[in-house]
Image: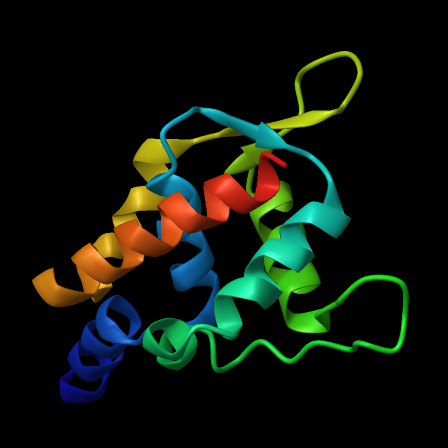
Length: 132
């Protein structure tokens, strides 16, 4: 029983790359974002270049040998969020994601108050970057 309790505790407190992206998306000001992988990858790549945000995005490595920065890890995170319907594309043109913010923001519990402030700043910058 002790092992099971330890497992439950770890699953609720261990931060994964998915959690960071979920919190960033959940803290955007709109319920929709553009469904443009190039913009999303470029935005997260730009965030990785800011010293104060590097520790949160350390799991994302970007291949810069193509036209645009690309991260396999980020691509997998987006795919998992799509599969779980936390990112959905119900619009007929499939040009934007609808964000399931209640579920995305559940990941905030894995971060402390100081992290919340930083992650909200990251969300604002992310939103600004993808809106160009």
